[in-house]
Length: 566
Image (cartoon, rainbow, N blue to C red):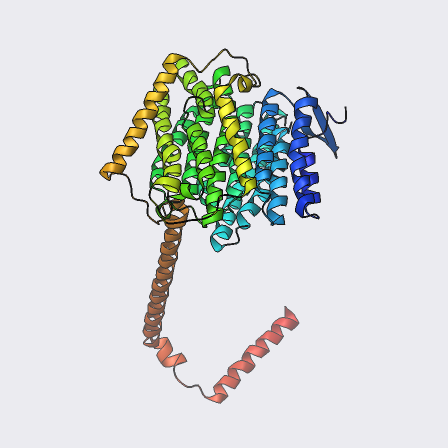
């Protein structure tokens, strides 16, 4: 019974503590044991409806509350953590190893939290632990990006805590279940979740920080923070209509920036937001089919997005950068990485027999069932855009576009093993979706491989690929250039500093004008006063010393008389 009640974050925190004082094979074994043993324990020993609480003062922290929703996310987080530990075994950086374990453990803690206070604790631990994966790059850009990242993440935690307290005031409950938007606390909590989920205008921390992280850090970051937010939305806000439209915008707007971007890790960061949009939209619809679609999409997305980030991390590890303009021809030096990257690209593009197809189709079908034709068309456009920037652009420019002349080694064995595991799972889920569907939280009757759906998807992919080829041949595609493309960052990186500078200049000018006006007025008053009869005949002339002594004596005498008789 004790093992059943063991919170899933414990093995990760214990492994982080041990990894801090070990190194080499011993450290690697400890790191591998945490997700492997923890995942097996979760699968075989932990049933639905387990509750474990810890008394703190007069409050009971629900450190563990299991249902099918939390278990599904727990399974995929353990799988991803194991793959990522394998991927990072070549590192000799203790900081990244410990931070990664704490980060993964914090995601487990947030996933199984049964109350909002426990969620807040792990919510903040997610922020603090993950920022070290950015700072570990040890560059000025990474340091600044990490600070901006941390500001957003801490703000999310502050909003969550404030929202929880207001929600408690209105409802008398801190349970982490359906929250809704019936009181101001619900809106604050939604905003807190929205920051970590990269809602529009709140997303810049992701596209800013992920490309600035280490070659392994981006892959680790792509798994946990945003998927914990998706889980939180699925638990707290299913069927909230506003999420449909937020999700549709999230799915569409990153496409334009991804097409322009030269850094392929930043392309994948925009693509990540695009995929989150599908999940948010499915949560907003709120039917069993759409919610299962959001969960299935999160499950499969963790695998293929981490696979893509791992492939670009391998390129960065060997070449030193991931700029599309300076890559190409790497398939000659890194053929295995190229093939694995293509599998990830096929999965994110929802090619039939790959994982993205069997997950994304649930949300698309749910939209049609609910009569959301305009949103469906927006997501259809977003699906075509995914093929363009993530399905074709990333592998094409990294490995095939032109021969850059770069000759390097293949990725290290541990990296290839990790990418291979993720690729196999992408193909397995895509070709045998019944295994994924069987663990989804809600009952549904759906099968993705019908003739109409498969043909429609193949047509979409064909014409999207044709458009990419046509644009490249005709020269209509934006050139791959070293440049900085700002989106919502423009407000605080350009507009705000410019506004502050203009405001300070205005205040300085106003101060000088006021000083000049005051000086001029004083000069005028002094000039007028000096010409007056009082100044001329009484104050301006010299008084005899005797007169001054007389008047001083008179004043002193008057003061003494007042003191005696007053």
